[in-house]
Length: 430
Image 1: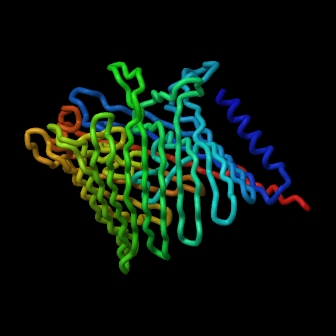
Image 2: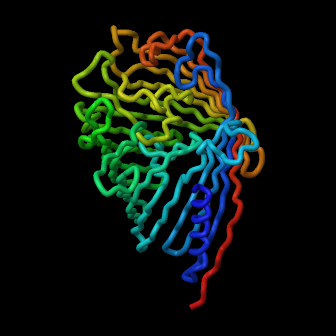
Image 3: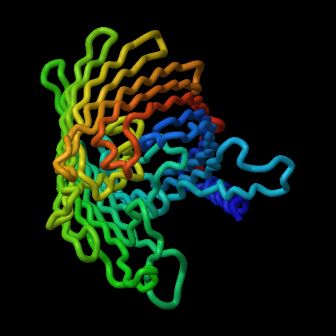
């Protein structure tokens, strides 16, 4: 079925490319990346007497784009797999790793108004609430519709989605759960830009299916969570500031109210071959011994890997409904060559809410190193190493695992992103 879907998609684009209406372009890009990882305390504290993990993941993605005067189409298919996950000389690929990543159409109604419908990446600002999650091999997409207005330096997006598992004659129960997968979603995003500054505002409403019974087999209404706030950036002479403030309210689940916040501010300064940065982010949390409300902020659909340490101890498939986080960090980017640089970043982590037994709020310190080298056109090498110096209190938020083992992570990634094909299909005469 997946191969047939790809064939239909390509045929669909070729048919449109033959419509003699206006100037048309057809473009095909490849995105191939392979990443080796050594995990010894990545994402969680390393258990005693356990063996480290090592593997190679690969993404193979094909992007096909079509563009005409008032119409754009885009299809991206991908295979995400682990080297060796399919037995040799097997007649079929049984790992179910092939998928449709994007498939959308954009219609331009006039100079200012357009709409974009289908499976698509939604990404805004620093990607804290909405992001493409490109670090993850599979990425993140939404099956959604967006109406856009753009004029000069102002833009407005109104988006929405309604999710179902399949077509049905009765009921709208939605059983797909986990990772804040929503049944319905609506949002408004506004942004005003100036020459070197911008400010944006987001209001997001997400609805999650509730169930009754231990088996979660009877749908019982929908709980709605609202996220609203702003992102800004502006320069003061040679120092560039960026920050955000968001508030979440509504329902954490069917029976629990939600009241949570996020605050962040970062300053960067560039001098010669160095970039210096200092920042702080506060994400509210719930008292570990219980609270009258859920006060735990979660950044929902952002590219969370780029925040709060590359070892992904917080908000990357974890740390939901927990004690929150205070993250104070500093970074330096060294230009090491004409096509290379080295990032050094340090994080000081502490709990935002009280830990059980009045334990020390300090959770640990993480150091991240990432070296980037452009090898040739469209080919880039990344090498990374991270080390977590965990405190005893980290055990309290990581399932009781010991904090005194070595917790480190190393990786090497090769990214290849060539343009395979691009043609101007011309314009038909009147």
